[in-house]
Image 1 (cartoon, rainbow, N blue to C red):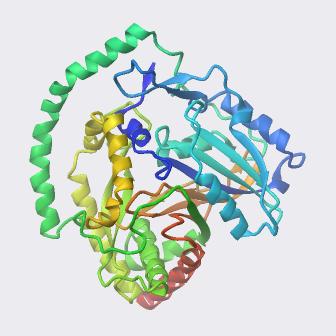
Image 2 (spheres, rainbow, N blue to C red):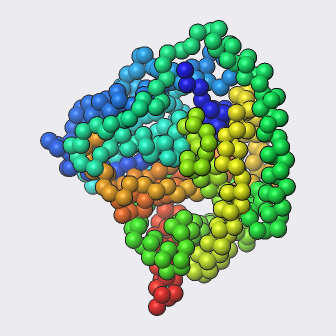
Length: 467
C-alpha cells in the first residue's frame, strides 16, 4: 500500500473545474528520425512497452468512504493504454497558433480520477511536417523533477534505444487494502495528529518571527499580499490560453557570464523584460515591481522519502518598473540572493510536514467558496504569477523513436495568479511554455514574442558591459 503524502494529496484537494492541478509538456518531434518511418501504431507499441515497466504509469487513486486518511495509490488491474493515448489532428492551417489553441483546450480538461492520472495526445497535421505530443500528468503524482524522470523513461539518446532499466520498482502500488486495515490506519493517524502537531509547533514558533523580521526589513524575499494588482490577478475559470517560444542556451549563458549571475537570474530578467513590454501594451504596467512565486525542488535537501512532490517556493521581485535591462539583471541578482538565503533558512520539510494535516473537505469547500465569492479580486494580491525554471537534458533525446525538437513545460494557474511561465533547458536550447487563464489573458502570443526581444536587450547590455 502506498499512501499519498499530504503535499501530494493537497493538489487533489485544491482542484476544481476552474483550478486544474495537472502539469503538461508540449513536445515537438521530427518524425523523419524514426527508424523505419513514423507510424502511430508503432509509437503506441513502444509506449505500451515502456509503460509496462514503470508502475507509476499504471497506478490509480483509491479513496473509499471509510478511508480517514489521504488517498492511496493502487495498481489499475484494468489498465488500458487506449484510455491514455489519443491521436488527433490540428485544424488547418496547422500553424503554431492552431497548435496552441488545441493544446490550451486539452489543458483545460480535467483528468479522469478513476484511471491513472496521465494522458498523452499525439497531434499530427502540422504545417512544417513535425508531430506534437502533449503530455498531461497530475501534480498529485509528479513535481518538476519526478515528472522529468518519468518522461525520461519514454525517451532515449538514440532513436532505437531499448527501454531503460527502471531500477527498483519505486511507485509499485499493489492492490487495495482490506477495510479493517484501512480503518485502523486512518484511526491511528487521527489519534496521532495532536502529537505530530505538538512536535511541529515549536519549529514554526521559532521560524515565523525570524522569517517575518527579514521580510519586513527588506533583507529577504517580498512579503506576500504586497504585489501590485494587474489584469493577471483575478478569479479564473477552466478556460486556458497557451503559447510557447524557444531561445538559444548559449545566449542565456552569455548574459550570465557577462553579469556574473546565475541562469535563474537571467531567466527572471527575461521574464521581467517581456512582462514589462506585454503589460505596457495592455496599459496595465504597474509602477511597482511584480512579485513572482518561484517553485524550488528540495529533492537534495529533504529528509522525507515518501511522496512524489518534494518542492518548496520563494517569492521573487521582478523589476518590471525599470526600463534599463542591465539594471533589471543587477537588481534581480541581488534580490534573488537575499530571497534564496531567506528561503533556505526555512526547513526543507516544513511544507511537507504541515501538508500532512490537509483535509479534503476543508480544502475543497475553501477553494469553492474562494472562487464563488471572487475573493481573489477583493484582498491584496498575494503574487502576480508563477515562474519556474528547470534544468533539462543537455543532449538531444528521442521520444519513442522521434527526435525531440522542442520541450515546452506548462504549469498550472491559480485563482489570483492567472499566468504560469515555465522554462526548461533542452539540448542547447531554452524552451519556454506559457499557460494562462483565458478570461484574464486571452492571447499569450504577444508575451511569447516579447521574450526573444527581451533576450536581445540583455545581449546588447551584456556586450556593453564586456566591451
